[in-house]
Length: 71
Image (cartoon, rainbow, N blue to C red; front, side, top):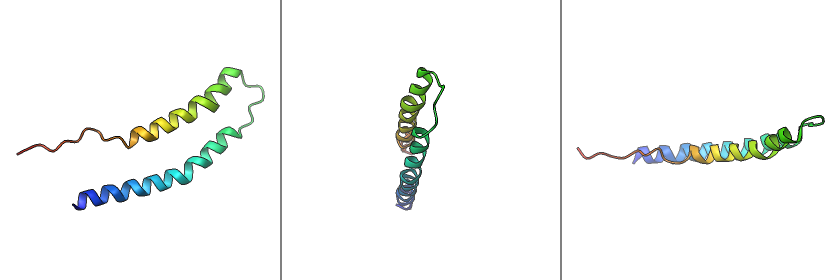
């Protein structure tokens, strides 16, 4: 039971940190001065990069297939 409690606490702390830091990072990305950048680079920087960050954050919390074996 202690193992489950520590996992829940760790996930809660991690989600709180992400919830605090991610909006700041997204605002820094969206407020970047992009004058002189090609259109493709602007698209990658403003659309694809935030999507990859969100996908990466979601995949971090997907279980990695841990199974308990019978002994």
